[in-house]
Length: 206
View 1 (tube, helix red, strand yellow):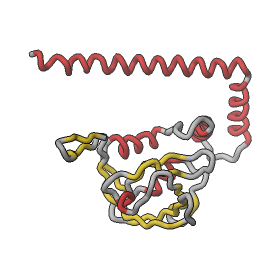
View 2 (view 1 turned 30 degrees about the vertical axis):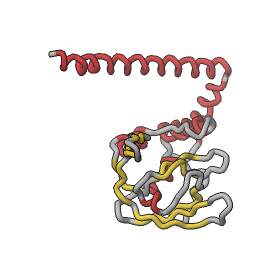
View 3 (view 1 turned 180 degrees about the horizontal axis):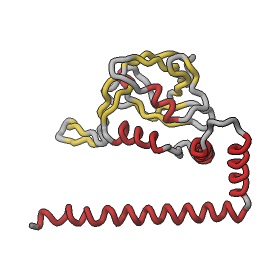
View 4 (view 1 turned 180 degrees about the vertical axis):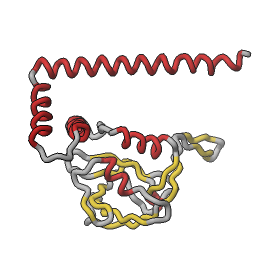
């Protein structure tokens, strides 16, 4: 009986924590929007939305305009902040939380100063690692097309694809001229923890 108690406790606590974090996020949102409203900034957003809805050529939905506005807001913060639509978040979970995807094996971030993607780390035993792609390498083009200024998830979609197909990345590395790397996409298995034994019975965990 004792062995069954922790899962029950976890089942009770998880919704509680989710509710707490949800309420905290809601309250924070109210505070932010309240400050914007008092300062008159929220009125600018409403006016812009009204003008787009009333004067712009038909075919643009309010949802698309709002998504674009939120993307713009987060792009003005730091390189690690990004807004996901519902579909983008679904893809993010499938590609990054489920542990397997078709790609080249690099963790990337967006450099807000240049508008390009920067390699944070290549994943061991992947095409990118075998091609000697290094942390700090800048991705300038995907399949011959510039990615400058594009959203992180949009570029990631172009790099990933069906296993055993190829993608060509144009890279920039400090001290070198731009160079191209042709990579064959593979199923990438993410490992959150890596471990191996070193000499003298020393365990290495990363």
